[in-house]
Image (tube, rainbow, N blue to C red):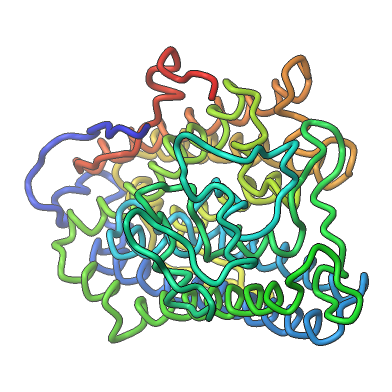
Length: 427
């Protein structure tokens, strides 16, 4: 459950006077900061869309010639494409257009039995919460959603979008990163032991098909991947010169525009990443709360979320070709208004990055993946996650002080996992 925390103070309209002080002359204009933020959003979503296009190519090659090698290449492309996407999540929360769109690309967790076959012993056959728990679109020509019968004989982008949250159940997810992830890896049946999903490449081999419906599964994977790439391209265009996301932001006054920026990075740091993605799983010791649960890539996703927070705060981004984009940022404004607060944010941000880097490094080593860190009784793994949570919370509180220094007001996403853990019960 998410709640909102109201931070900051009401003040006169933001302008040069709002940043008065000894260093005010060095501060960029608030409007320039807001415009650069929009430019950064366009560039970062373009980077994510480009990486998804490479994923498309690798998935097409896998479907055309299924083998262990082509499957591994598609999986590797998925992992690589996740990095620039995770960095864009710092544009969520403050921008309604992004949040409305996000459910089609990164909704999680998902009940994978809606999409394809599952191990019934591990997964179960029914759910009191979800009538579509094992609907298995790939093996079906139609499915029942409430009183309606939905034709699923032809898999299309519209069908995948329409079935997201079908029947009002958020775990019904048929498009986006995690649908593609499940189709590439399959279920991770290892629990909190070492090992990711082990879907055989022959699930896509129409001549030596395993688990049935191989041609249909390939169609689903292709449409889901193509839809993901198209959705990312759509958001990149939405931040372009004539895009709706840019237009909506630039219509705002300076104060409101700056509040959007802080709302995004503060909410991602606190309620979303520290709370919903990390603390919740730690309270429950539940691998279903692991973000990239099929691929065991969660350690990277969390790390690159923090990289994205820093990208937006400092107004900089390193493109795939190594080129660094820089410009006026909210970090510049905070430093001009209150250097001590700026120093605190720098220190807390560095500490958050370092804490998540420890999780990433351990995951990258193969010694301990994130689902293993979550395990009840794994004191060392639990501590790494808790240290990450603590560092992200401290970063969010430092961001709050930056908001106050600029005399802004924001609503930052909260999380019951942080705000009222006693209400978080085991499933």
